[in-house]
Image (cartoon, rainbow, N blue to C red):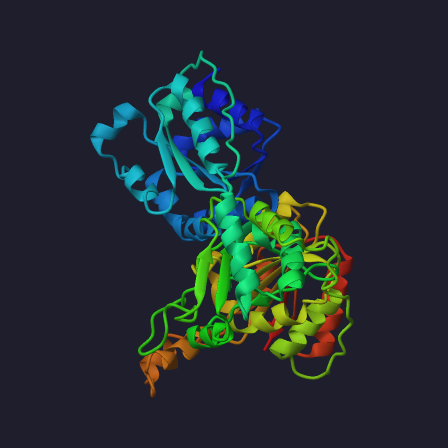
Length: 514
C-alpha cells in the first residue's frame, strides 16, 4: 500500500463519501487510489470553481465534508472564490491539494507555488504531509478540523512522492469535539432582554434556520412577541408549509436599517449583528438601531439550536407552535414573465422536500417571497457574495441528496462564471432543473451604479454591465453539453415547462426570458 492508498482508505473510514475532482499529473496516484475505494464517489468538474462550489453544496445538505482534489497551487487558486463562499457559509470542506515531489521543488518548475500562502486566505486550517507514512495522518487532521462545528474550510498538501512511496503506518480516526454552548448567565441575559424589551427580535443564521431551530425560535416568538429575522444571505433555511416563517433582512443597507429601526432589542443567534453588504456614500454600514440593545449569543462556533431551546425553556414557552406556514396555491397572471409571476410558478410547482440553490440576483427575491407557503423545501443562498456559486452548489446538493429534486435559480451573468457545471450535471445524471433568468444584463450592478452616486453613466460604463452584445444563447450552450433545454417567454409556457421538469427525473435547463 502506498501513501495515496492509505490516505483515501482512512478518509473513507472517517465517513468521506464524495470527491469532487479536477486533477493533474501530480495527483495521478491519488486518482488511482480513488479508483480502489468504492465508498467514495468521484465526480469530475471541468473547472476548479465547480469542484469547490459542489463541495460547498454537498456540505450544506449533509453537514459532512466532501473531498476536493485540486492540481497544485494554481488549481486551488481557481477554486478560491467558491471556497470564500463556503467559509462564509461555515460549512465543512476538505481540500486535497497535490504538489510536486519534494525533491522536485528546488528546481522551481513552472507550476511551483506557495500553496500554504494561498490557502491562508480562506482556509481555517492547512497541513502539509512530511512523508508517505504521515500523509494519511495529515489528511485526517484536516478532516477533523473541517468538522469543527458548524464546519470549516480546510486543506492539506499531498506531495507526489508521498503519494507513490510505500506507507506502513496506521493512524486512528480522530475524535470530533462537541459544539460549544453558551453559559447559563448568557441565557438569562437574553431571556430578561426579550421580556423587558417593547420591540424585540431574534436575528437568526446558521443552524438556527434548520427546522428544529426555527421551531424553538417559534416557541420564543409566541412567548415574547419577538420578530424572527434572518440573515440576508444564509447558508440553508428549511421553509415552506408546516415550518415557522421568518422575515429576511433586505439587501440594500438603508432598507435593512429601516426594517430594524423600530427595535429596541436584538438577540443574535447563529450569526453576527447585521451590517451593510457594501459601503456607500452617506449610507449606513452598521444596521442595528443605534440605541438598541444588541446581545450576541456567542459566535458561529456556538450550538445555535441548543441556545434557542434553552432560551425557550427558560421563558416557559409552550411546546406547541401555531405560527407555521400553510400550503397555498397561487393564482397566476398570464402574459410576460415578471419576478413575481416567476415566484408564483415556482411556489406552485416545487415538490415536497425540494432543494433550491438561489443565485437569481435581481429576479430571485420574488421567487423567495412567493415560496413561503410552498411545499416544505430547503433554500440555499450566496453566502459570500462571490458569484458563480449557484450551479456548482446545486450540483453538490444533488450528489448529497439523490432522492430530492434540486432547482437551480440562476442569473444569466452569474451562470457564465461556472457554466461547466452543466456538463457534470449531465455526466452524473443528476436530478437538477436549471432556471436561467435571462435579462441580458448584470442588472444588480446597474442598480449599484446609481447607488454609489453615478447619476449619468456613459456608454463605456453601461457597456460593462450589458450582456446582449452578443446575446448568450443558453439553450445552445446546454444542448452542446448534452442537456435538454428550452426557452420560455410567457407565464403559461414557464408553468408548463416547470411542471414537466418537476415530474420527470434528470438534468434540464429552462431559459426564462424576463
